[in-house]
Length: 148
Image (cartoon, rainbow, N blue to C red; front, top):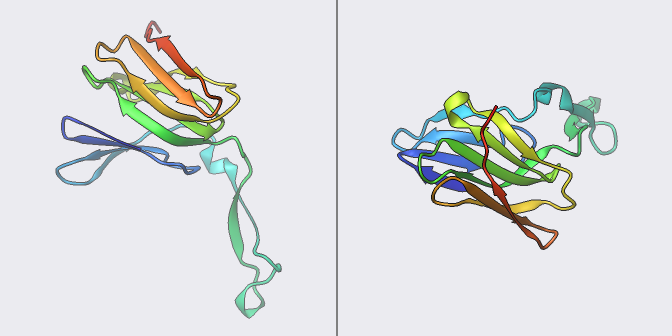
């Protein structure tokens, strides 16, 4: 997913690591990668390649995710008015996460235990509401409350 606001690009990727990143539009350089899973380094394991042996008789390893519930992003967006909130929805763990851009991108809200992946998120123009929809066929509307 892509969103652009004031010379900054927000990308969301359907992958187990570095799912949400912020880039400088002018220089095309990475500004920040949001940390979604504090144990990301521990979630990747290796397994032998098919057949157990690679070229030259050595074992070759392929990455395998030990946590099938990783947050795999389908949709992400800056809030419209000030861009101080990032909302992301995805599959794997089937949830929506909200991040505060003014506080080092810390997550301040999660909607989880959804039955299917979230494919689309959107924030209203006054940053007071957001909506998301997904594989379960429902569109849900929530109020944004940052009292933490």
